[in-house]
View 1 (cartoon, rainbow, N blue to C red):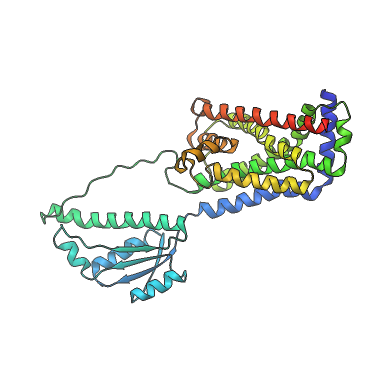
View 2: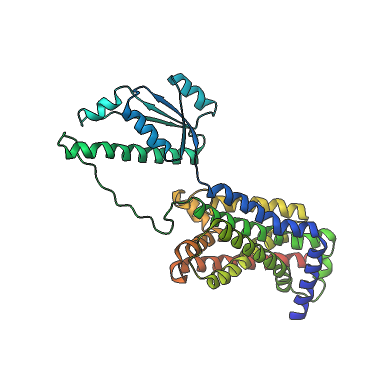
Length: 375
């Protein structure tokens, strides 16, 4: 058995080595894509072009604009009318706009029961930028209002002191989007590469007409799956560590957990994820069909993994479907090890889910190949 599997592995290695272009694409393509994503997300959302209509022209309004500009989230410029704001936002010249009403300073100093309102307009077509702009704007207004209200309260001017908020953020103290996006992107790319490589294995044999020759040899369906999996696991596993090393070194991605534990679980996950590719390969008749089916499966995996949309916000039926994809469970494990330094006791349920899904996937693949043999 080991001799037959070894010969099949050697055969796969020779085929991969002969296709140098594909080998370079597999090793360098995902790495370059991940580096571009990491570079873009690690910068954060800053310098949003922001139109400012100051109808008060007072020291208080100018102080608010200065506080807003100091956040580096907004890049303000002045306009004269509301129509100009509407035109700039419609044409994408401004992603946000601030409107400070007349009497802003007088309202701050006056009665506390009717404070002035600052209108902030954000372009909701860019959801991520809009959410960031809205959150930062709320923080700026609250902080600036606190600076003005506190002296008034201490002087007995009738203003009430604001509530104090004690906020602590665990595991991602700087609230960096990159600490969430990069592990998710890394896990997704690694899973996609593993599935794509495996999906072409058996389909290539069928397309070249050599699958029938393999079927009449003493090689069993299980041995064929193992032989086809080893090279794909090695390539995917190597790519995973290249990407992980690059983002940890270049973008300071935290690595708080056990490297040995991550190595073992990553290998286990790759073996399971390859099952999708092998199942696709067993169904597809050509490599092009395998790639197209694999691409469709990968896109569905993105939707139900929590990478594109939080699984917790999905309807109950969609949440149940999401549990059928190993990538969803792996992203929880991966982020827990990297960001939280967690151990198996934290995510053992996810490990069991991946193991169960792997058993089902590989069982289905073996049954498909046996059916092909009988045909």
